Length: 128
Image (cartoon, rainbow, N blue to C red; front, side, top):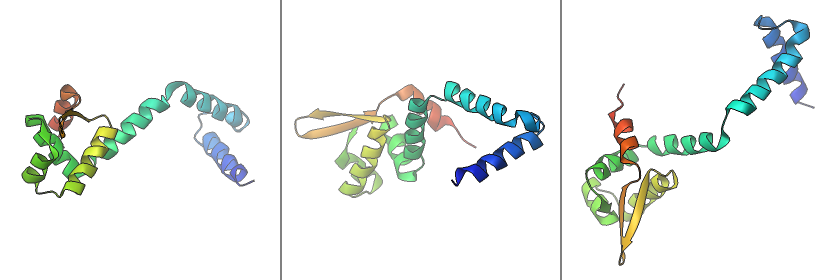
């Protein structure tokens, strides 16, 4: 089994870190695994991962900046950002799947807006 050498190395590393003795390494690892299970909310990790991936693209950030100013349909975003329809729709789908933007239909038109303006204002205010 391939995981055994990695487990042995992990136990050695724990013991070497002096956070536990070599005899306590296995029990300490089990304690750490339990801590991870208790403290990591997988649903939130998944949602945050989607959001950060969605925000990791310059085109999607441009869409957010412009949607922060006003609700728009795809054709308006295409004109404002010089995008093709498939490209604009692709980026909007990713933002919508990450619960960053939402849409509403009016006849055959679909209008996009920011799902949580407070959150987006905070995110867009970040600068390094």
